[in-house]
Length: 178
Image (cartoon, rainbow, N blue to C red; front, side, top):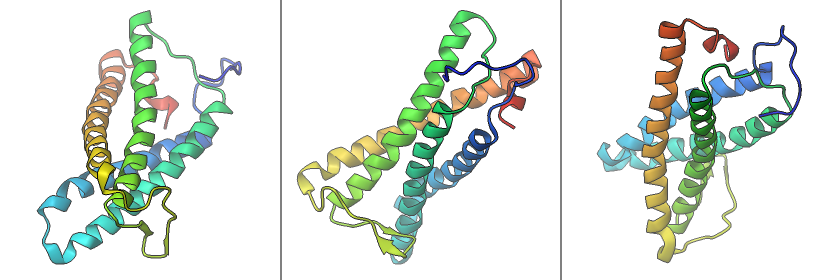
């Protein structure tokens, strides 16, 4: 949370934070299922699926870094509700941020460790800090895979909280990010 004070009129996140939230959400909602179906597509198109999945994931990583900067430099609306609910909201948001960094980093490193450099949307090769490292490739792949499932669970909790606040509580929580 930002240490900046907000006025009563400031009930929404900053515009750049809102834009980054929805842009990253859209990218994740495209990237996650794309990664899931890679194992089921024909071999002759599999590399194309990997190219798009990895390129979108790398974009998510950089947008998340920008988003963290935006959050740290923007006022944050106050979270209302009982202390346990506020703690749960902070925990889920914090874990979303962590796994939206861990997942693309582990995927990028796993790809490199398996010996495949990232060709970002086919435009250029992204430098690899580790190169082909078969000894750790499967560990990085496991981290990436588990991170994907954890992120899906966190998304489900986040979405359930949105529905709870918007439909049950009928408060302004959803409007703060729209």
